[in-house]
Length: 181
Image 1: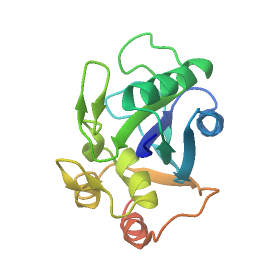
Image 2: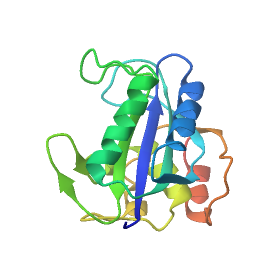
Image 3: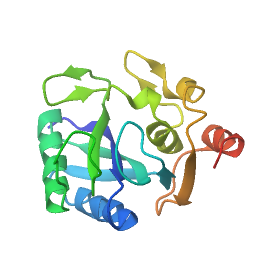
């Protein structure tokens, strides 16, 4: 079976947010035919277009044999297992898992859009993504790093460094040094 690389955004702004994100990482490690390959630090951010308190966010890279719909289904099962409730759009959430990128493909369906449609507008996606993949290219958009200027006024604070090492992080660390971190 072919092997694919996907990037997943993780967020929580309800309850024990750091615990929810760590629990999500543990569950991601157990997804069939999928291996957690890299994880960013945890970041604290204010909600954007959403209700509730501050978020804890991270991005992970997985290597998977699952096609995008099956990966989405696995992520939704994790959300449900960890108490995700969807009472109304943009409600506070114990856990939110989004496929940001999947190889270099683009998908547009009712339940799934890849690349994630707002990823270039969100510091809570770009900063952790660039921490683990500093040269990542977003299909149809170009280098993710070029969008840092768009999100420079969104406060983001590094909370916890990753357990896993990552590639050279100089460009993202330079951005963080000049931002509100």
